[in-house]
Image (cartoon, rainbow, N blue to C red; front, side):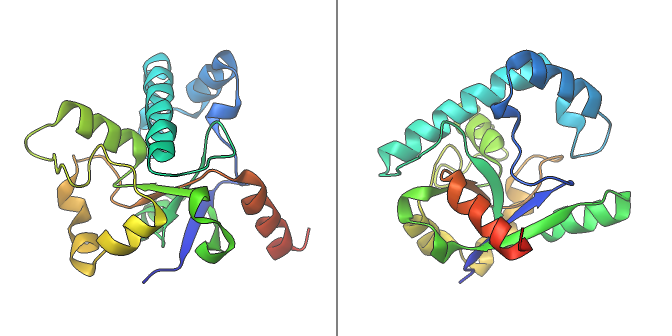
Length: 192
């Protein structure tokens, strides 16, 4: 069983559009937009912002329903285990990313939630139920750490790509709802 999550970032870790005002976020998305899988999502920044806010509200609410104890309004986003796709794409596209792998053991059960794949995609598939991709056991679901330890199998991980629309990144997203623990771990590891 994988016992870590990976936070990928460019230059500064643990940043989130959700920490910005709407106008600040829209300005940043316009600056970041390009045709790569990382930034094409910002093509329509107003729509992306509204979708993101809806998905985060859903994510937080569902996590609380399952016993989660979020200490924050929005999570820091990470990946359960790691993502070969993100790392390989970054390398081939010449995008310099950094990563920090954080042991799951430093968090309490109520600090982490998970979705398959990205929470916005899972929310959308769970809501609209497109026949080609919808898996009711996974999409539109928010998982706890205990849930993930039960459902994650080698078979599931090897089929992630076929379970989602083209253009979405195949991984299990981990949401960190206790920012302080993640930040302290980063500072300790970097000896800052």
